[in-house]
Length: 290
Ligand code: ZN
Image (cartoon, rainbow, N blue to C red; front, side, top):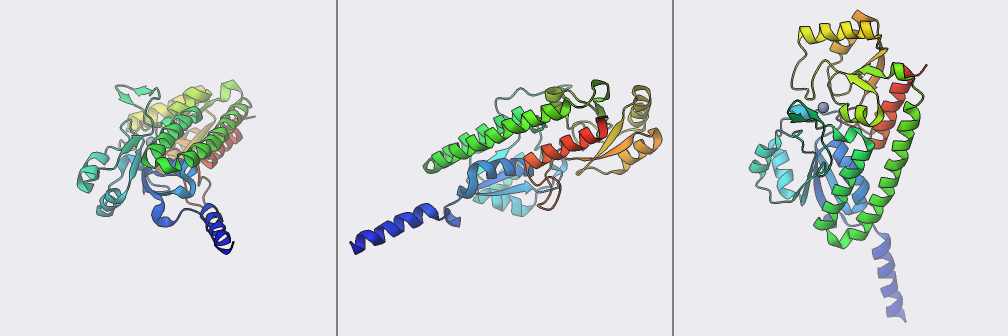
């Protein structure tokens, strides 16, 4: 009887205790938004870290030798693909890693900008659901023993994303259609625009690597005046001076900061993907709704 009781205590402890640190699946995500998706699906069964952390710019990242070591120790690497992580092939080679790589955008329909794919697919919530299912399947393949945990956590998170998508559509409906037009620094909201019907115009293209020319800026200033575009927005990853200058020259007000390619730290406005979308939609409706 005593032995039985001891056995029972061990079983209860094994179920109640979170996975021990060394048992957790070591996952690296290329940037903060992917890291948040992995954390939501993996819970305490994964140890997630990101190469490009909060408020970092994934377009122009310069990997460090410690990144190569971290990748070498990881069991799964999660990337966006669609040309976002141009610095990755060299880093992978340097790391010598044989860990599987999951491309979270696999299977979604990319938007094209000229001949290139627009990488910012996460800005539409229906696309974020594709990211999450790809991540779920990759976690299940990397750690089949925890498949049940990954599947049920993914279901819960996917339901939250469905609710978020409905919320965004309800909020956008409050903005008069003539006012659904804004300026952002770089062209990061193409998927948001096509999913939710707000037009974004940006002086810089889909990558922050390029700079706006004097002609681009002059063109935008004219466009804001002729089309009476009500608001311009800053970004957490871009230099605010350009947008402030455009605002000063046109009278369009600065509607706040939009988070496009990066989450913030815990104390910021957008520590998770869901917080980021909510923050952006609030910034847009308060600048555009009448
Ligand atoms: Zn971007």
